[in-house]
Length: 145
Picture 1 (cartoon, rainbow, N blue to C red):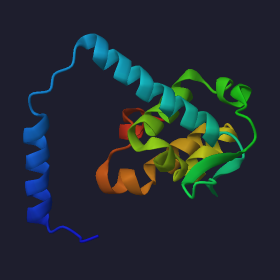
Picture 2 (picture 1 turned 120 degrees about the horizontal axis):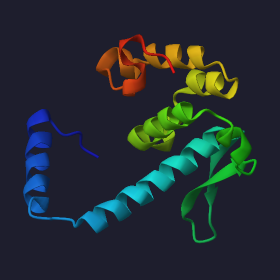
Picture 3 (picture 1 turned 45 degrees about the horizontal axis):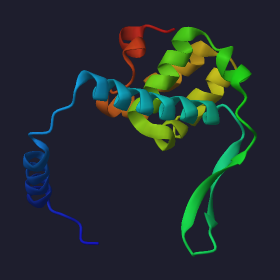
Picture 4 (picture 1 turned 180 degrees about the vertical axis):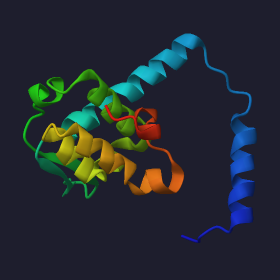
């Protein structure tokens, strides 16, 4: 696949924007989309609290799918976390997706160990925060859990 230049990428983005510019959603549709996205984020966070990995499996028809190979989700490990910690984890998952969340390995280890100060420091030291300041607001200006 050919890598697009900046100008080609910008033109493509504008074309897509024009194509979808007149689409509107009702508040009910927006709520449904949000709820579906939130459920995926929560599922991804719960999986991050369990041992296991995503594995690629080949189906009989030759198609390849990813399958979670690990323990069943232990909701107790998730539910025992303080509300603010769950909110931060869900925010990360919602905004970065499951694969993005799993990149925060040190943060997740610290949360699982209930070392919340360390977890906050791991986010502050993350590449995303240091390069973009895209870390959740709870950690900006030195506020730690």
